[in-house]
Image (cartoon, rainbow, N blue to C red; front, side, top):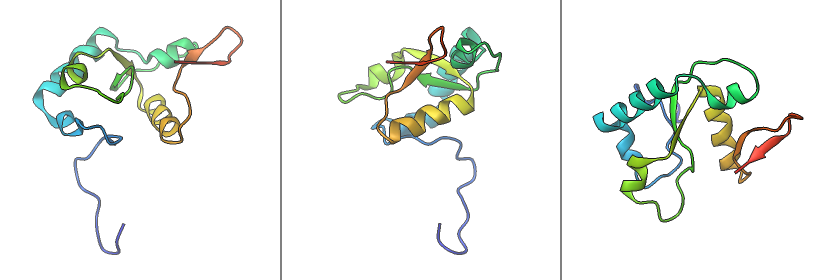
Length: 112
């Protein structure tokens, strides 16, 4: 960040370069997010580890694959995650590692 500049207020999400990143700020996305979080109010990744954590993020379960269409963006599938789990998924994807979808009975990560 340049000296003297300030971060943009109200920005709450990294978009990861999705061609549809501009859709996250829409009323339609806010309704989609609200519906998902009402349907699954707890973080699925935390629940798989035996923890109870309120979800705050409506996540695109399959990420944003090459060839994603706007219809795919809106129809999901989605899962609910807490901010910590979503941030760790995003960091892992940016490093090029496999996305983890929970753990097996021995505690080892399960990938996609």
